[in-house]
Length: 340
Image 1 (cartoon, rainbow, N blue to C red):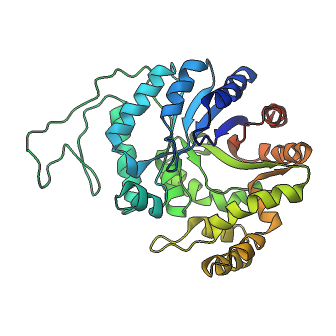
Image 2 (cartoon, rainbow, N blue to C red):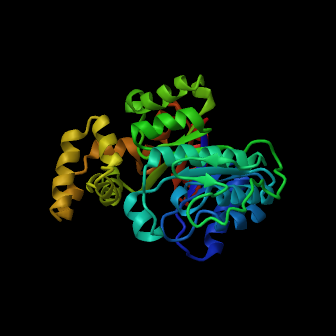
Image 3 (cartoon, rainbow, N blue to C red):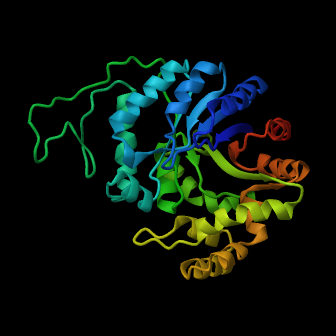
C-alpha cells in the first residue's frame, strides 16, 4: 500500500506547506493530493509544487466537475502533466448540491449521466482527438439555441507528454461507484473501512464486471482524516464535529450519501440519532451521538502507535493509496514503514 499526503491548505503561508511537501518528496511519499471546496482551488498549488518537487505524484482530490467544462479540465490536466514531467493524477468529483448551486451558481442536475459524459469527452481531449459529443449535458461542438452555427470539432493544441493521464472519480452513491468501476482508473471513496470492505466495494465490482475489467484496473485512493492526540478519546472528540456534519444533513432530492454509507456499514441506528439532533439544530447532541467505533474505522485517531496499528489493518485491504490529511512528517514516515 502506498502512502500519500492530503493537503488541507487554506491559504496559509506557502513556505510552511512547501517545507512539508519537499520533505515528503525526499522521503518517498507516493503522491500529494490538493483538496478543493470553495477556498483555494485544487490546481494552482500543484503548479507551484510541480516546480519545487522532483518525483512525488501530484493529484487533485478533487477538481469539481460542475465548475469546469470537460475541455477546460483537459487543458488543465495536460498543462499540469507537462509542468510536472508526467506526474499528474486527475481526481474528479461532482461535489454536493449546496456547494455547486450556492457557490458556482449552476444546477446540480443528473449527476450520473453528467459524470459519464464528462469522462468520455475528457478522455478524447486528453488523447488529442477531435471532440464530437452530443449528450444530455454536453454538446460539443455546440449547436443549441444561440449558437453561431460556425463551430467545428477541435482538438487541443498541446501535445500530450504521455499516452494516458489516470482519471480518479470521487464517488459515494452505489450507482456512481459502479460507474467508476466501468470508466475510471481509480476510485476515491467518501467513507471507507476495511471491516466493511465487501459491502462498500460491491457496486465497484459490479461496474468492473459490466465493463469486463478486474480489480487491478481501478486503484482505490482513500483520503483519510487524521487526529494525532495523546489519547484516542481526545482524537475522536476532535473529529466528531466533522463526522456529525457528514451524517446529519438531509438534502433532497439527492439525499445524503455519507449517511447511506454509514447505514451500509451497520451504523443505521446511530446515524439516525445524529440526523435527528442535527436537523433539530441540537448540534452538540448530534456531535456527541457520533459513535466511537465509526470514527475508529473511517479515520486515523490517537497517539502515533494507535495510528500505525490502524494503518497495518488498512494495508491488508484493497486500498492502494492511503492519503492522510496531515502535515505531520513523523507520522508520514511511520506510515510508510507500516504500509510496507
